[in-house]
Amino acid sequence: MVAEDLDPSADLVVAELADRQVPVVRFDLAHFPQRLTLVAEHDGTIPGWSGLLETTARTVRLEEVRAVYYRRPGLPVPSPDIAADYRQWAVSQALVGMVQVLSSLPVVWMHHPDVYRASAHKPGQLVTASASGLRVPRTMVTNSAEHARRWAKTIGGPLIVKPVTAASIN
Figure 1 (cartoon, rainbow, N blue to C red):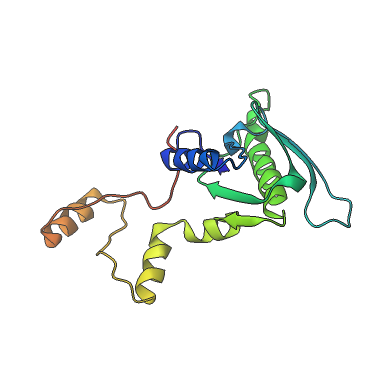
Figure 2 (figure 1 turned 45 degrees about the horizontal axis):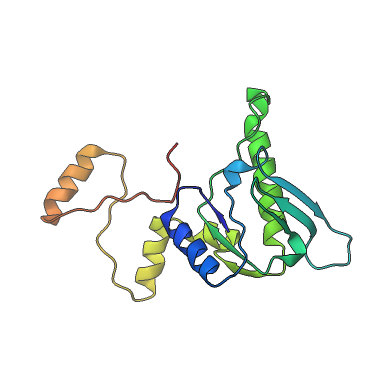
């Protein structure tokens, strides 16, 4: 399971898997590369990768992974020793390295990163839902408080404010 540390929904899934005696390794990408080790090898003949993933608590062999649940992980956090000019580059290298190794494993996925990325944003979700015949609420996306207040008056009822994408607040 790849999920941020503070995720009550992911906690429930881990608890259920434990009750069913299904081995699970959970980690947040924010632990990579400082507190999480990836050793992946591809010999050109096997599907996916061989190697291991080590958290501070558990180790799993990549070839023993049967499924991956990808649920809103944080971004990798590089060493503070990396110069500021190279930090974003280091984050992108860690993110692509880990996610691409995992996403190329021949396993069952729940929220494959490519699909997750394409569907994780509310504006696109709403358009897809309404085009599919589902009822969706009237929605406004704005960074203008003035326009939001004016729009809220036309609604005449309670409003719900939601983020446009899942993201951790640090």
